[in-house]
Length: 313
Image (cartoon, rainbow, N blue to C red; front, top):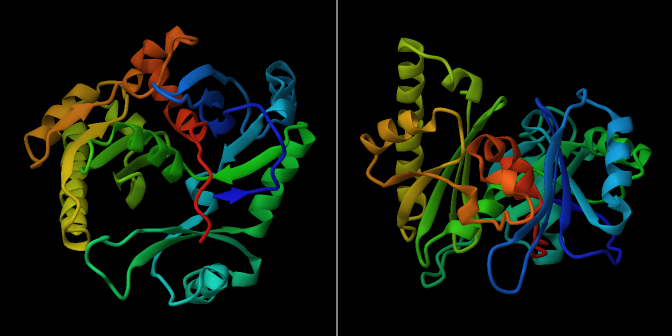
């Protein structure tokens, strides 16, 4: 979401993501025809904040030769749905800052803000439409920059998991149809709905991958809660975006995912499939990623490495 000054680099993005297992790292290069090529992807054991491990990775991967990005944690930013201001593009961010100033629990002057448009239906003119405002405290951005500077990694951008998941979803969208993608990690669940390469809906769930690994009645209750959240989200999407027809829902790689897929498929009106990331990426250089367990570990960082420059608003 937050790009920094550009420098000439090798093709593709090198992404870093702090996660419970350690530091996820991936390099992905888009090709003219065919699937994006994953040239490198791994998870290195590390503490929550470890510039020394980052620095070693930077040397091994020649990070200075690449455009590098990293992800904020969900607790480090807010993603706010607001009505798009009636403002020219060069004044949009200033207008958004004014609009969200009472939605933050800190002063808006202490916030770094970016915006993500939700395009309205093209064939039906509308006066008002929505957009997402992404706000993070200035010191969070500054601390992340300082961490990577200490590791001698030149960051080109800082992004968020919602956009990383969007990047994967758009590779799988059927033409003229929308796609729902659901993922889980130790921080919780994330549902996204994309259409035409754009993110229309992002919703967080407070159910983690560890909880879904449990057995017995508790697991059944999690399935029920997830199903209810999906039904509510799809109902909302149908009302807000009636021009989007969902082709299907996909669930990102997850241990024991088939049970969840079966439960959702029997309770939702859209087909439900388990995602194999090999359908979206070329893993020929990293064959270990054919394993669902590795895909689950690397899901978000692979999405981050698919980054495209967003259109300026």
